[in-house]
Image (cartoon, rainbow, N blue to C red):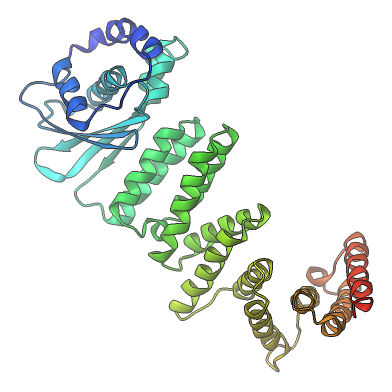
Length: 381
């Protein structure tokens, strides 16, 4: 093991390597592994394996001679430093996993990013800040999948709080490696993914944001309809709708419906989910699917069991139906539906139930919009 008093010397001696080396071809896994072995950070008797995944490096250490977390953190920093030195342009973050000698299912995982190493080299982070800022996850042999995921999620949350985006991404990826259903186990897992995507967007890294969005969207096929998973999928669906990416939104909108149908019970938001799916289909020009979905909601609202149909929802439903028939060039039917929508809008404006009442300003805006649609369909032959 490296003498830890030399950490500061090691960091200072390699500043120029991390800041001045030009970009070059990415090194192979074996070349990166050899660079760590040659640095003699760990005893020769220690087992070392290395896996490379698109700029993220997973180093697995077996037979580590110390049980002290401080020693593990320092060597994780030194290993990351060595790898960043060897391939500065292509390493984003390094996870060093110390496997317990007595049980291969128990380990401590520590993630250090290229940004942290570069910051320390440039003097933006001192040695104490670097060491104290390193967050570890300790997995015990008795931890079940849910508990393991929660530990990774909490570590990711802490990293996001300190703007450690690549570290947070790595911890969330570690959770995902445990099971493809990770989003169903933890309500915070999905929200942290979207939080991470937003942080990358604010940093100007739309490629990372898109990659995270796609991973969330892809996970809907293996997810269960837990409240946390549904909440995450709805948020991403709505983000896509705001961005007018209806081709992506419709996949999530349909998936949210399917998850509820598969589990044999629906949430209180089911009708809104169905309405959102219809809106996606209408915007994609598929009026027939949209009409079928809207009429399904109408049947529920108008059923005898539904004594108090929502005026606000009925306003939206009839307007959406009008838009669908207008899309099909059926102006007369569209006008009839817009007029029905306006009737329910009038009722919503004077409703005695506060949750069903719309403000005067919103009422004026909605009536103006409906009148414009009515006038347009009136002039259509």
